Length: 168
Image (cartoon, rainbow, N blue to C red):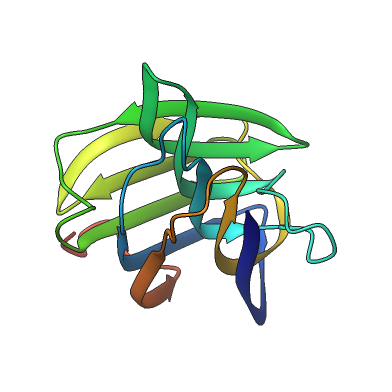
């Protein structure tokens, strides 16, 4: 068991007329299972650096395991520790790095967050979109097992006030 976490000193404030694009290449060494269980995340979050628990607020790609039949990747948006989650699949982030793009759009009246993997739209959320101060972060928290598990990030690029016509 153990925890590792990294966050930027830069704070991104998400509220009112915000257009933000986050590009990153991510990968894990293996999926969690009942013997070696862990969670991992990449995105904009408010992770508590004291406890290193997974995010309560943010928009991020999430790897999880709850039982033998429930392991994989999700796109999560979270506000006040209430999550909207969409299971995502159709890619291999164990063997190869994948490009994950998260788009935030807050027009002042409508809020959306979208996830693209390798250029394909896999999830759109309109509920539990975070507002307020968030940090670029990624982390892994292992809860069971002794086999080493890793979560990698190759890069993160942030585009503030991106245009809708920028190619994914």
